[in-house]
Image (cartoon, rainbow, N blue to C red; front, side, top):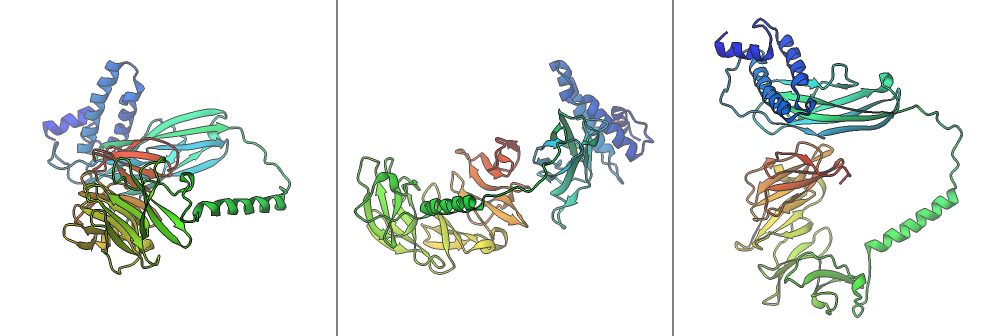
Length: 437
């Protein structure tokens, strides 16, 4: 072995004749010994961080199965990302078992080896073998983390971690568990008072139905009952809203609570305005074949800008007012349509990558879109340029409703585990809340 290779064996404190299994076992032991979280003194913590980096590099070089890679080979390193970054098993009774799903993605270069390490020598949890989510792609990988409380003590809080390692680069997942004494289950049937249940259901139906439709006569416009969610402020003090008048939905523009709203004189839904172009786009026609109409505030004229192509929904102007985005179609066939105001043309983003869209959002500069797509029973968040170029998958876990930060450098996504923030390139994942979004 070369002098450089011998140095890596020395860092891991293994002989040159060590087998891959011996190298991996020693690596796991050293990670536990030098992990920075074990140290309180800042100098010791800093030393441990440096030492751990050396250990990771040494393991990355020595863990090849056939051809040993020379150190610092010119290639993009893998960047593992875990979802969720924390597994909380909640409260379990002694003797109870549980499993949670863990998904590992890779935002960097290709990875040749996947390993793992536990925070303790005798863990109360177990990691399953990873399975590919998509047969033709190496990542993401699905794992199951299982716990068995039979050998744990009651009324205790347990906190450990595991790390998934891609070519020596780890991503940590925290694990938490609270144990309680097993309680005897109550016996005997539970008697439901069906008359009370039915009465409550009827009341709920009546109350819920009142939220879905409010019909007002044309001469009655009390501010508290208007559908006054501001879609877009045409001017600093104005907003658009719609009011049901009999069987028609009429559009209004208002300047505030104290001023009388102005009736625009045409019927439509989902109106959105752009201050930049002084135009209002809205939907008109049958719900299954509705089309987009454009009202020019300066000229006072209306023109139809789409024809055919399926139902339209979720109208949204780009921040510069040069493009109008919307959804076309239904269900898993729904796509993103864009109308270019300068060219006077409508086009759809490539169907093979954008079909099945549930939500989309413009970037602050109007040059890209966030949107989510279905992959099996889960959703993923993507970004794409307005001309259908520069497609990039940002999340590798079940997530939706991506939203941009004001400067376009960060995005927020919703999950069943709370809100997450990540960079607009899909990196630096950070959990903001633990309340399901």
